[in-house]
Amino acid sequence: MTPRTVLTIAGSDSGAGAGIQADLKTFAALGAYGTSVLTAVTAQSTRGVDAVLPLPPQTVRDQMDSVLGD
Image (cartoon, rainbow, N blue to C red; front, side, top):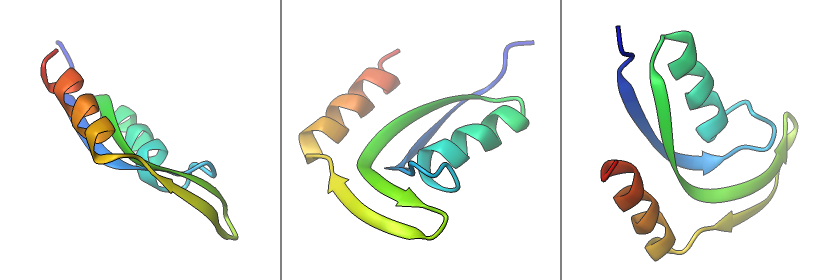
């Protein structure tokens, strides 16, 4: 059986407790194939967020176009 493909649109959490990383782990645990569109890159740990770099809207759109066009 082919796993369902699901999409998450979120920021990246370098500590892997939230955001894209947590979503992809959840998808895998549920047997789904996860795809992602990043909205921001963060520098963070379990203690907090140290920096956030939002991605330009066009970059987010480009990722969406690529993933949804596949």
